[in-house]
Length: 173
Image 1: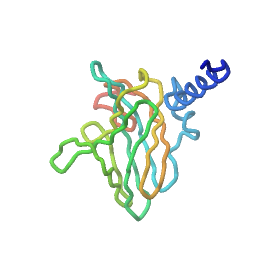
Image 2 (image 1 turned 90 degrees about the horizontal axis):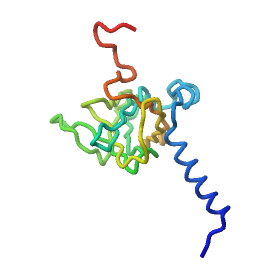
Image 3 (image 1 turned 180 degrees about the horizontal axis):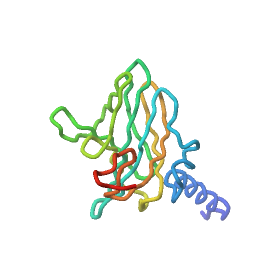
Image 4 (image 1 turned 45 degrees about the horizontal axis):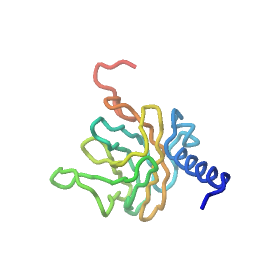
């Protein structure tokens, strides 16, 4: 059976537009996220960024800080992204080992969860394309109480300072 040309073109357009909404090239975070300011809901996510893979690795890492502004704990249950086929939350256990967190991560009442180098990340595997500094990646964070929080993370070069990180001593702006 031969598919009519308009049906094939429509399918390709939908697939392309869907992926374009999840990895954006050279869009400043302030424009991509609307206001440029963190959301003012019960969960506030700041300093989101993604480090591209370093060959021969083919996984990227997403980092961010989650603030729970409520008087009740919440749990980050899942992270989704269109940048790769998988997104797995990793945290450190009481022994300091990095482990996958299948039950999510607890954010205490009026507390924070910081995912940073050596302290946790979201591993994005089976990337759908090349991630380059200057692009942005959409992340969908699903919380037990707060529901879904959409985040736009800048792709930054390996070795570049993380958003919100203090400048190294002796550095000039």
